[in-house]
Length: 294
Image 1 (cartoon, rainbow, N blue to C red):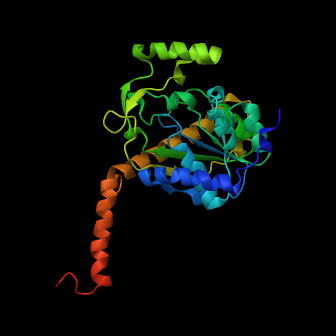
Image 2: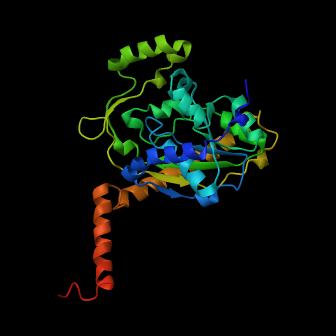
Image 3: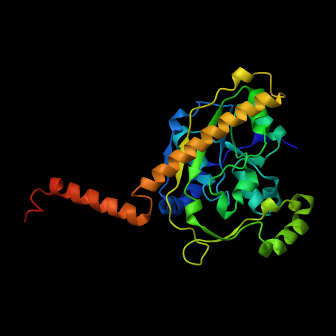
């Protein structure tokens, strides 16, 4: 099997096609990004953040925005389940995602690449209604061990906005979804025995699955230097310290983004339209003097 480091980035033609496909979604969500200028100039680095519900709603914009601003294609560790789905697994391969094993992550870091990791994995992406924006990392230490081993920084990041796009009708653990879980076990085999691969049943606009046009907020924090723990990747206490530092940073970023969201008059299309009209009303008298007084 070829090394994940041997991946070939998308061609310019494919990039243009993908950006064109994402353009309506950008218009729908009007995303804002904070802290991208603080990313390291080059890898290796681990970008560690939160998954929002469904996982794939907001993630693509991260990769294209980093490439647009910094000229870097970051790679992503993803759940094994993605490669069980025909066609979708091809999309994942084209985008540079790899099966989220330690060996794959280690190979990418050794090659000097930036790697996105969601320690909450499928459990966060299939969260219930009472777990909005709550990190579900449990006792996972793998990403911290790998960062210590590679001697690379951890860049914490957070995403806010997707949870407000949907209203959960049926939580993933509900008995109503038992048939879906049974089908998943039959299709995925042993991997499908996890209930956390079953997403909640939600609605967006009205009773439809179309997400409400909420703004997406992204924030990237200061890199966490892991060199003070050099050589201690097998030490549970050291790995836990690094993990907890990253978790606290991500939680703080999420809190800051939610505060921005709650006070943002441009959070929705109507709010953005109102701000645009207000700006136009202020600019018009300067462009056409006397127009208001006539």
